Amino acid sequence: MADSTPSSPSESLPVIDVSALVADGAGRERVAAQIGAACRAHGFFYVTGHGVDPALVQRLEDLSRRFFALDEPTKMRWRMALGGRAWRGYFPLGGELTSGRPDWKEGLYLGTELPADHPLVRAGTPVHGPNLFPDIEGFRATVLAYMDAVTRLGHRLMEGIALSLGLPAAYFAERYTADPLILFRIFNYPTQPVPEGMDVHWGVGEHTDYGLLTILRQDDVGGLQVRTPGGWIEAPPVAQSFVCNIGDMLDRMTGGLYKSTPHRVTRNTSGRDRLSFPLFFDPNFEARVRRIEGLDGAATDDSAERWDRANVHAFSGRYGDYLLAKVSKVFPQLRDEVL
Image (cartoon, rainbow, N blue to C red):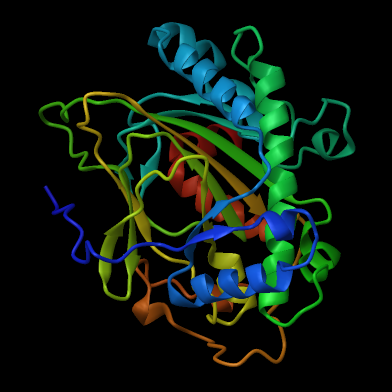
């Protein structure tokens, strides 16, 4: 098994109180500067003072544990194949790939709830449509409330990122995220050794995220690791916080000034199942991502330094096309069946 011991255990990610940014009050420029420093250093930071109701988060965790406690045949009633082009629903252990290897997790894919008669759904736009909500009392309402609250936080954080770059606060909203593509995942990492004969070394293997900003709630088990210039470090749970990281499209927009950072999740052997709730705050599906003019340190090709040797700066086209090319590698069988 690959070594999961961090090589730089003394380094830690910054914890930023974003309450001034959330309240749009005095001090938001100071918060923006802290976010900018974190994005330049390693693209990851914790946020506190975010305003998301802890009782809502706790309800989501409790209901998620109820869902994952169901037997697999029951959970498969909401399998992703039934979600069609909306790309929503449940996948079992080993059902998702990272860099071609199965992850040691199960999960639910969710996103902005759109009715069947919505124009984007009627047009067959991929990753748009209704969710497949498990038949658990309160689950649907809790998930929708949580996504709404964290999406609001995402808008505020993107304002902070814009200010940190010397741009107007509304820069990203006016170009990409007035109607963001919101993808939400509920992941469960069971605690158990890898079954004999399965090449599964990680909860999630090394990767970067695709879009603008990921806002992650993790429970108290831990396991997230981040690759910094000094080596791999732990990103342990911090009470009542979210872990945020920037994705490939923000890397592209800033010309590499803010780099999308590789991260991974160790296989869970804690004795307790681990829950993780990443919300991906991304450009609109139809948005054409362009580089921000006038930023120092911009790159055109840093593929030799990237974990996947990809050149995100060469991409041209709709964000949705970029996203589909990526997620199709995560679920190749579903891609063939659905897309």
